[in-house]
Image (cartoon, rainbow, N blue to C red; front, side):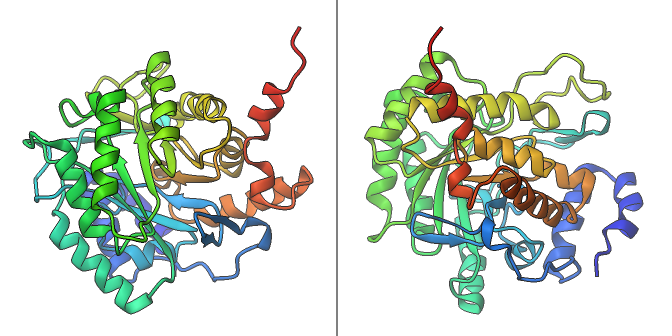
Length: 359
């Protein structure tokens, strides 16, 4: 039973962080809707030796502590990503730290990596694996503790703990809410982190991805593309929330400090996705996230270079019924344009531009 239409008016009356916790707990208790497992064949895609029933995933930040993995997959997602997870438990930033921008279909958060820590979350993911085996693709997003002086050691600790449990590992160096974190996207810093994490992963190792910020200089973009191709990174996630505040935001919380997600992030994150696709020559799998709220949005990310897409903020406003609406619409768009699979459509917009005759 989908209780969201009944619960939506109540959820709108309580604070966004309380609503988030209530939603996760309801899902964990089995109160969420369940989409029948009958995926459209055109949406199936294989990446890193894993078969995704569809390319639409749940972004990190929703199930921070791995409490509702099975229930989240049951909403119709092709994969879920839990976290961010820090080595030691930490409370994150003081409240209030989440703000709905309803008029803008956006959210600002400054959670600051509130996490129950590696041990608690690994225990939950292990229990999921013992119950469901390899059913359902689960990524793990790693963060660093706020007071840590050795970021690479924190990421390596997460890799060691989750390397045998996760379908892929994400190093999150792009949250705007942990001081100094985004500086780790620099060429030397990122190369060092990747090397330490690689050394901590088991053999065979799960795919290793880096999650990037949307607020990058041209030099940053070139450096990250170079590091990703040379250091053995298996993919990039583009992008995290933005510290920018686009003109035209209408909601009263628009000036709050933190990372902005949702509709205003769709255009800049998709533009960055296309740039990174071009800089890496389409050689590196990309996951597009930021502002996805419809099948058309997901399709735009794919055409800009994404092999997979993720969403989260749109569900705050539209509810879990959005997921099957996006997957169904995406299948229709692929068939409309004559594509036989997701893979056939990946990066076609970028490649067409690159191959266009020069004036």
